[in-house]
Image 1 (cartoon, rainbow, N blue to C red):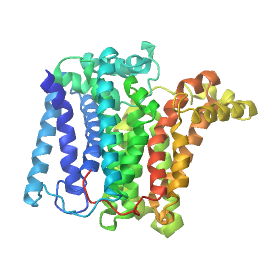
Image 2 (cartoon, rainbow, N blue to C red):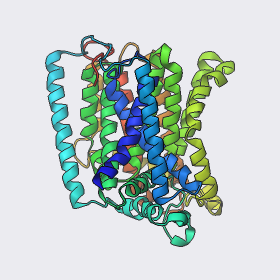
Image 3 (tube, rainbow, N blue to C red):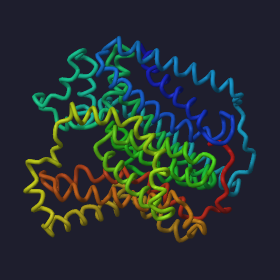
Length: 474
């Protein structure tokens, strides 16, 4: 049973890693940028396998039949990708042999500190998860409950989306519940460890991606600093224990911005990075409804940047790769929203009149501003706010001289405010009590953007020995 549960994650992640090795610019070396590829493979593997399982169930394959077909397709994919890699002469060794960025004594100390904190957090996460295996209220009332319907109902699995159940948020996307149900069907057992594993993988893949991407784009010193600040954010660890979909969404937002930044850096691999960025954008929309807002934000921001740099004539050829990546996931999203999801409780035709009136109430703007400003200053749960750590770092390190030419920063400068204003708009029109809505959701909404904000911040500031691209795999 346990082997089958592990296999349900191992197969798609291995397939995604091999695919990344094939499409990743930089030669035929598996170990090149391996940290970044492994962290991206986790999200791609889990996300695409959940889409595939959803499609299989829609064509009538449920239960063990779906598992057999899914597993067979995964194994065939791995064998085919491995054979292509062998035929192309891939080797394990990395092609890079340069020096690490940053003074070796500081980098060494930061490395020790990073891995110590990482191991402690993983240990505490596992220990606390055993004492609270079902996570928070949203986990067992929404995500895990829907997963149980999907795993148990067989041919009647569509009843998981029935309004007669009285289950909240029936319009929520299916990455988390479909991934849980898929693993349960693989192991033929509804083990509570599966949601824990998914939360652990996304949480620490987010940390790993932050460190490895900044080590790749700048240097290891910068990557480790960013990783420590991210792990020092209490909300990240708290939300990981709750098993909600907010950390997976934060992961996909960060992944997209990382890939768009790599797209701006490496001319030979630009289209490949864009296709992967489109895929990650699609998977964000398959994770939470806020991911649909992120999808709009990415397309809108990218279009503005392309038109500004190259004119309207370049918009379609420059945007085609990102749309191609998006199309891999879009059919599953459209199928879910068109045939299964009921109307959203916030954006509902029944509430249009009330929502329109609320847009012109100054007190709501004041309450929203006060609620967010108050929380940002105490985002560390009353202790030292991570935002307060960044201010002295900015003055100490200064701005990087080449930040104006960093396309990833330009994208983030448009996308993150767009997302935040979208969240503010939801608060303005919500039919729920505004104070309750802000209090119960602002931490999670800020967490969606926090890893990407940190990534952008450390791209913006100078490194100790200049922004040399790290050549050591992280």
